[in-house]
Image 1: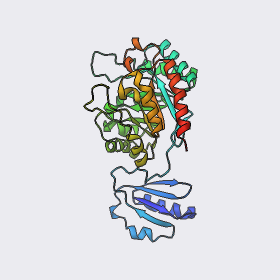
Image 2: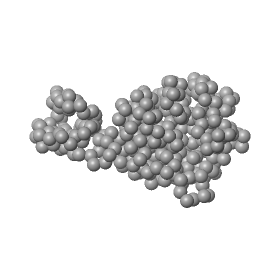
Image 3: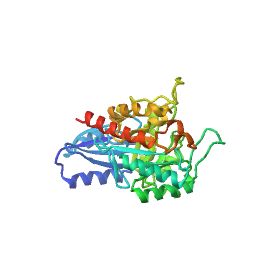
Image 4: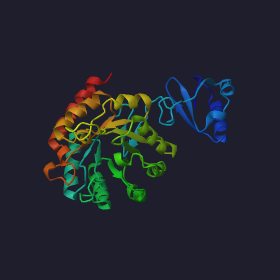
Length: 334
């Protein structure tokens, strides 16, 4: 339920209404915008008397949210949410350029890539320490050692780090990770999402290979319902009948998600197509569509990469793409 308040409503009366709703066992979220103030009420509101609430002096309108996702709903929070991670921001006009290797392979590799992407304009460093692989015989990541190498790269470059978690039991290892990524295969791992609802860091939630936009938003709702309001949605391509690309990038998901939700939306074009030479075109399309950020795989020697080398840009290619991204952003900004 959404309670729209009249402009310049006294704070004491807003506090009184909020406390009353809290005593009724509802969670209440206050959203103060430039032109309107909204109370978002989470819980079973069917027993609340809408007419009685509308009769209050400070209340302009009461609206029931019909969609099953409440906390992530833009109706609930009309203003774009801004996430802060390691000093970097994303959302609300702040663009994130997240870059790095699919897997952290060695100290030399992650340091070389981190320095290169930082120089090219990246705002965050990505790197996989725990790797979900289709084949049990493929490289599974350096695990805790990989996270330590990421922390060392952060210490040298100052870039906030993003890495994927696969297991609830590993959560303590991610205390110093600035953004915890939930991969496509874990998008509906609800036990993991509940635990991340207790985390303090932002969660970058990737859309599943065959999941709808509604299902992505419902997964995000698990995290917010658990108490963590900091979720970043990620479109990374979905599985279709097409065989010329690894997945099919659903570029329409960007404006749809931005319309439905206040959460930042980033695009991962590397996993979307799986072919490095097509990554720049998809990246620019995502920026033009209104994405709040990009997640790009970059490797110093893609031909020797232990995972996903075919979709990884070289540092020089990433530098060229970063320049193009800046130009497109300038062109589409109002």
